[in-house]
Length: 297
Image 1 (tube, rainbow, N blue to C red):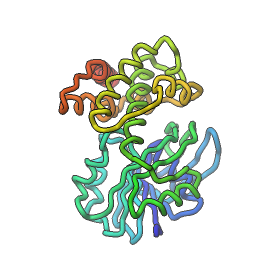
Image 2 (image 1 turned 90 degrees about the vertical axis):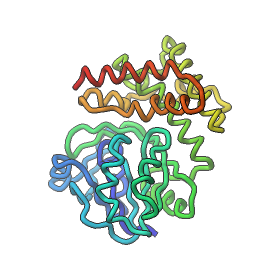
Image 3 (image 1 turned 180 degrees about the horizontal axis):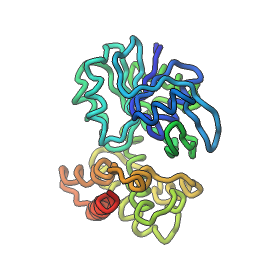
Image 4 (image 1 turned 180 degrees about the vertical axis):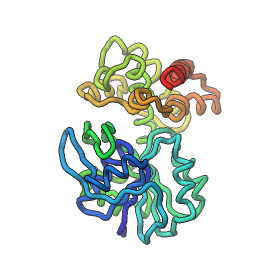
């Protein structure tokens, strides 16, 4: 049973989840001071596909974690360790920490900090949003939330589903993680490099580059026991071709922030090195994005 919800890292996705959940649940968001001040003064405003104001409590840090709390970790993977270290001593045996993040095995970073203090589960989100300004998030893409299977997962999936967040328990979380990772490895760096929205990834002129990225990812995934029987290139065009969202990597670059490239394409390269598979195209994209990070900062 979940009585309280904490959203740890209320950027675009964290804020969107908090606003959805606040209609039915007691929600606290942990965010930076300007966002906290705006939320506490005026509420958490959602604009875009739908418009409403979520009433949540906002703080810059937690002083306690109440019994039967679900913690949604929605920070960038780069910030996972510091965010979780700040609350590690507050966690309880009945706490569930759900990592709603990008990347390959991002939950391992959390488990290394948390140990056996609480249950840590992985989740994948297909929602899209842009952080417009403190107190305001632009809702761009409806989606679903897929949760790693465990004894605690079904009630959490139900809670998310009832709040409009499409919660369901995964049949195979490794497959879901790799699917989103491959999508991210194609969409995030390429649309960031060409300076476009997500939908432009369907441009057939990009197909040769996309296919090279996909082929490397599929080879590494196959070595990890994950196999896909779909045309990933076509799937990306079909699923994302109409999207007017801006990929999270491009959002980070526009704001002069570090990206998650090390946990996307970089993770594929690193895993490939461990098992003897070279990934030169993904490595090149990592190098380009890191160059853009230096240029933007």
